[in-house]
Length: 297
Image 1 (spheres, rainbow, N blue to C red):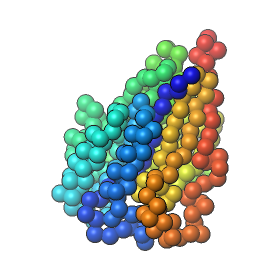
Image 2 (cartoon, rainbow, N blue to C red; image 1 turned 180 degrees about the vertical axis):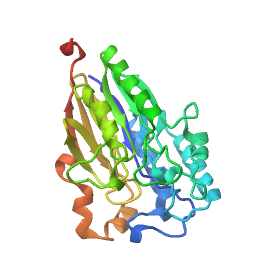
Image 3 (cartoon, rainbow, N blue to C red; image 1 turned 45 degrees about the horizontal axis):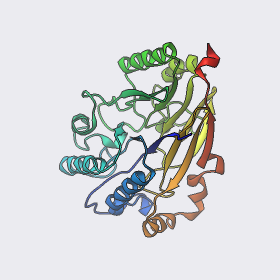
Image 4 (spheres, one colour; image 1 turned 135 degrees about the vertical axis):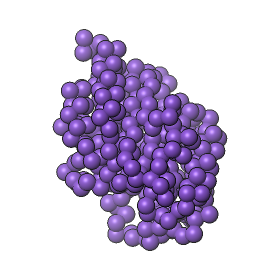
């Protein structure tokens, strides 16, 4: 049977005409346009039904000394690149997608918002895909925050999935809840306890959370909920996720970006840390059993 295919990319950190690479050269901003163009090519070769971008599309926020003009240029370039995809692409904002001078999300929403919102949902193959906006904050706060109104919307979406016998996949930029390995506030959404409280009753229907932010590959479970962290496009190990949805399972595969010289430059910065960023075999490839809706009736 032909599976439903979708892709997840994150942390492209696009910076056209970047003055330097960041994180000591680990992040390849000077090559960020080439990386973005190559991942678009690879996505089209994969031919997914849709793509989700997990945020930090550009280098806004507080860390990269972009001007507001450079930030808007980067957003527009990313939008143009996304239009080269042969499939729809859905975006959620990361903390670096806010205006570097004002902290505003207005320009981001103008480029990538749906009905002037950073969150959205849709249903395919009896799975409800929920894309959360964790940047409901006045400026680049590494941890982010999800408002009470959006949490109420998420809860309605979860209940709707229950009513229609759907399974659920949720996307966030920062971690939706901490793990044993990642406890710090900078890793997760500030009010992650509220998120966990809302989603916990729907554990059996939630197949996985997909997120980025940490620039590494990791898979973990918390209170029965599966979280799949995906490395950034911008730096080693420079991977994205192919996801194949079958009637009985979801297969998640990691795919490297095929730009050998750029990859080698990032890989050489701190080789002792590379195994940590790349992850274990189980962080790179995972199969998630699907729960037949009729089995729950």
